[in-house]
Length: 439
Image (tube, rainbow, N blue to C red; front, side, top):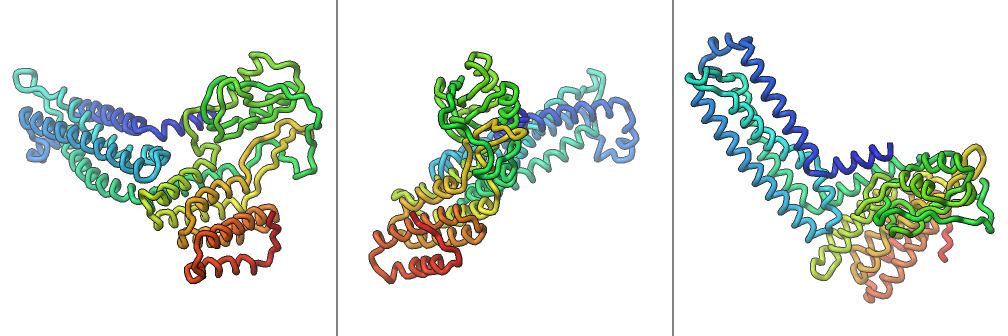
């Protein structure tokens, strides 16, 4: 299942998979319609509507040639527009959102339609014969080619509108936020194996001897077969501790996991562990909700840079981050110690709420010094997130963020009138019914 999900994510993120399917479908459609024409079952339609189905070989060839040449030209223009949009988005926002453009089903489908119509026309053209060649004109296939050309015109209009909409900051940020929220819904509160209750399940001994298992390649950990790790640990009567978690970078030869018990490590053990990990050149949201947060933060940082100075985009990023964290705040995250039949099997290195909260707000806060709008939006976002949880640990993490924002605002915004809205937001945080301990 892990390999299938990772493969599907790679295919979904490519610009060739959906177009290839559509081109293949166009070839099958062309061959099928030509065979139907050759069977003679549609001859009565030509006699009944001669103006619609009665094109000669020369006319059919000319029409399909014009459609084919037009569609391949439009496909080239569409590819050019896509590349320009990718370059613009990369320079204006961040290169990490290019994956979202490539995953866009609309872009993939439109490119596939243009190429599919071209291939359809070429296949049908190959079957047309003049009088000296044994006259054959697949009238139904030619008519469908005309209909497909109209579909192509509609797709071109839609494509131009879609590209113009998709490169807007709000669309890009919402796309990243939606993908992140979907990852949170999928990953939490799902647990692998049986999650031990906090501080109640078996814990490793302090003097446990851990044997490191090195990584076989360098890259980002995209996914881990968590159930497979439990089965692996059970089979060796061992305990596995993850040294690198999903979303982290691992260097070839560096410890990937550590194993306690089950005999000395060997090549077979390293191979078995490597098969449970998916390592690639970039992070994905298959099991890494933090990557979605990272994308939105990068857009905000680019907006706050002196060269761009786009406060509105930064505020929008913080607002969508509040939606992501509000969804996470209400979810139960699994305990790191995972058991199987009452025995400790795996110690997970995974996401936690304070870590994701810090990843979302720390760098934005540091780059928003003196920016009243962004600092105020950060406080409002924390207020929303705090209202979604009653967990003291999470409220404490939120309180620490509030304290840091208060210190930044009072240090970098000297005028009290400019700071009035921020002070009002801080007062609302202080009036909340929960007592927060700020370390």
